[in-house]
Length: 457
Image 1 (spheres, helix red, strand yellow):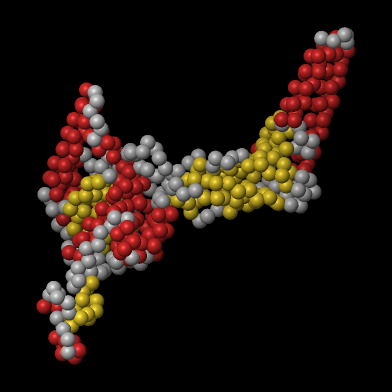
Image 2 (cartoon, one colour):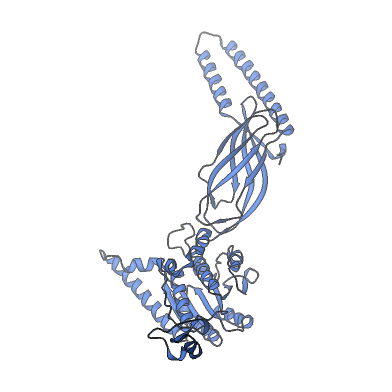
């Protein structure tokens, strides 16, 4: 991409600044010498004219060189980025001309893409190319743009730095913690799930879908004995069942104002919403691996910004779900639980496990209770309510001053009111989870696994 003169600007180089400073110092020294002042003025004027002529020549040579053989920029970008995951990017500058190009490059990407190595220095020989490498760490989700690159190109004589823009505009999506999502495949075994705190409650013979015939062991239900197989093999044989498959899991993801909370003071991907997305993806992976269909709806967004992903099966559905929800951002509005519940009942008629991920307060309890009661008419409902980490820290702080005591009392009162609210919501028949965001994924999978083995779904 060639930058036209109208999109460029000229800056004095360090060489020009040093030359002007040296000339000024020389003129000042001559002014205090025995040389007559008219001679000093004549010398300074002549030197200035010569320097302007050289700068003019440098500008003409630079313009002609750039118009004749501009640099070409090629990026090597991944298909997507992950919040907080540092990647190494490569930029290739190609010089098709017969002149040497030297300068500095600045990548013009979204401000949320942290690049500590800028600027990058390059020195490209005639008919050559140079590949520049630098590290980039995305700090926010969403669609991010790379608006070319800005280069400060040293002129042939070295007195001017040309401020040019090269390269095409490209866009890439930044997803929540894509590195963790890639690691989900490693969690295929129950032993590995146990290592991250997910409990196994498998019970031999539980479930209703027939799995295989196995030899009888003490404790197996007598009703599961297969008498025909027992007579054939001359030893007790029982039918083993696996957890029901072909179930549906539907997420209701709150995108309202309270999901914008950040316990770590604006750390990378640390908002309640980002951590809720990570937990959602973990449970989605486990459910898809178990043969269930997974879908999602958002609440707390504008009508045109709402997302609805119909339940689908297959592990490839995880990538599709990630693409659907990856660029969603929490809004400064309140969430309408009642309307969302009615909307879900209108679109999801088959019984499903509905997981509502939110952060509610006392004032939300009446509306939320009404919504949960409505959802319970057809679905099994799990309410996952996020708890602020800072409240627990305040409640556990040592009492050194009167202010500390007041803060602890306020935190304990808040926790008590929260617990009372959850008890009232549980009375509607919903299953409640109350945890800090970083524990949400494990808590959701544990509850899902228990419900599957209990045959509640």
